[in-house]
Image: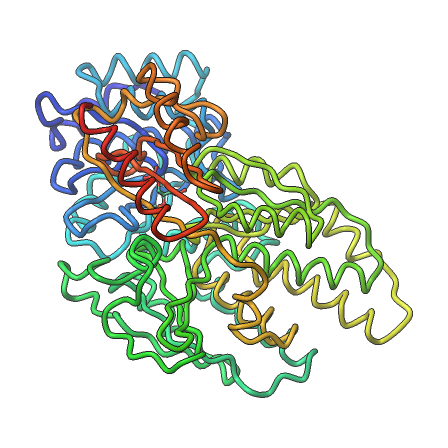
Length: 522
Ligand code: G16
């Protein structure tokens, strides 16, 4: 099959002159208005990926998640719902920046030995951003050069991951949005029946004025009572503004439009519903329950259930440098579960989590899930129990595999898993928050001339470039009891991030501000 049609199709999607694109932490992200050619070319690459994998279904998600409303982005999803393998990321960057598209497509086809005639299906989803519909057109134009395509319209990112997986693996679920909803709701209801929970799970969710609002409203069950706020998806300028998981985590305060009842749990999603955080007011104090807390809550529930059934499996928790030092200590010393660290980016955590029977991975920002190995799922099917209590624990473990979206972090399924865990373990939000005391911590965003000049090692905990900067950070950190700070370039925004942590609020702020000051000359 000739590769030439790519040239004719690309004429309607010219690359902006002098623009440079890089496939980062979560694909390409920049102003939506600059992305037309990039999304077209990602469509072409998705078709090549499908052909390389002998016609497997591939996904294209158009979203910029937590970024501001004018941004957009695009990322590729592999057949089992995983992120694009890292060895293919340079191809995405190569095509996005190409000045001779035909030659670059030929180069990839030759290197990967692809028969483009074998391309199968590429499915497309998007969040609610204004530039979404035109970027979907660009993606479809790119895909259709070599492959079949199907546009699923507005979806959460995890729903698109689910759909890709279920197209390739029918046992995973019905390959429709309704299939996703039915699978999740049925498993939640079964767990509630098993534990005789008749009082519906109730919570108010801030949906960041994003696609999560539309999808939460489709969960119909007499046992799930979710109130959705910040659900204005028609106002395209409202997305993630003063609300959403990133706002709450970064500012450590309530989002707009929450009038809190004390000691009542609330939750926030991000713009494409793949992150979730929880919080409540204890008197005048705002208490955040972030990704670290979700990981400890779910790991502790799984541990308890495994012990009841007397199952010995390899359970581990994966964190990044952003994890609060107290959470790591609690996991290792109290839960007695091993902790591994990876660089930021769910693709790294996901990969590491696959090394365990049960890999619980969460970034502090609320992005994460639990992975269950095939051996573990088989073990659950062949395990015999003797008591009713054991049988209940075993069935709960089996159903949790259905509730939790194993393809990627998912606000909806993580929300439900957390609310179930609290019900089953009979924990209040205070019980959950009192499991350990977080060290005061703060995240800063600093604008620099060239964020790519900041290079890190040791799971992003140390800078190797610019030379000498890490030594200066280390010297500052030593001045603060329990101090910790690191600097890394964002992969999704044009900025450098600074994290600081210390024994007191004042020290934490002081340390963070002084590290930010070091960055002024860059
Ligand atoms: C994306 C990634 C996350 C990452 C976040 C921030 O999240 O999927 O793994 O933590 O960006 O990354 P960075 O600090 O490199 O900008 P999302 O929710 O925006 O897709």
